[in-house]
Image 1: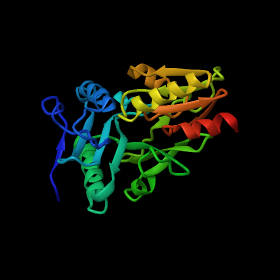
Image 2: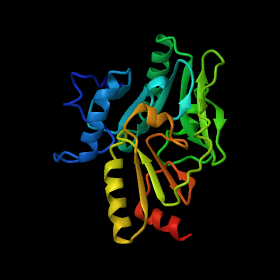
Image 3: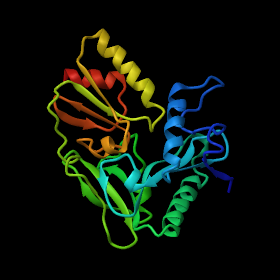
Image 4: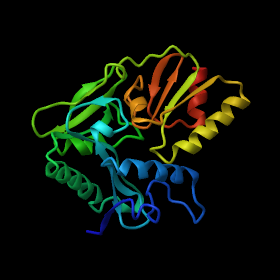
Length: 248
């Protein structure tokens, strides 16, 4: 098995962050994420990656400091487990999940959890893969999102009561977002440009603290969309998807 490396305060400035494979030109979303990660690593956040320029990594944190509206004692929360392209099919996903489970047991955690959905979403970790490790659905929302957990002691995390309401007063296209995903910065800029040109009301809610993240009024992994006051998705939207949403 190829070597893996964990990001640290000492190596993060030199390491490739996996998600966006780009040329020598620095990508603004990657640098935004790097800045966010520097702060999170101090809180026990783990970013483990294949030690090469590849999309093969896992990212998780203690649930108490994870920027998600989920409650639970002594759990780890997996933001993302992603292996893509030519690196699929080599056992890297298994190696990364095995590491997370071993780390959780070593730290005497009560379990591990992650966000899923009844119908697999493109921007979420593959829940069928997780279920093969024993992850089970422990909570759900009316919109079809699920909280999966691998419990070591029969305790169960849950979505916050506010997250399960999935309703806001603002009727405009509304986005909640943070800096955890490097794709977000460009998606937000494109959406702002589109809405401005087409005179579409847009409300942006920048989540820049743990307190705000724990109080988002819907499920949230780093991004969430409302329209006409109702929660729509955690998927990062393309402009064509926005067009269908506001014309349907």
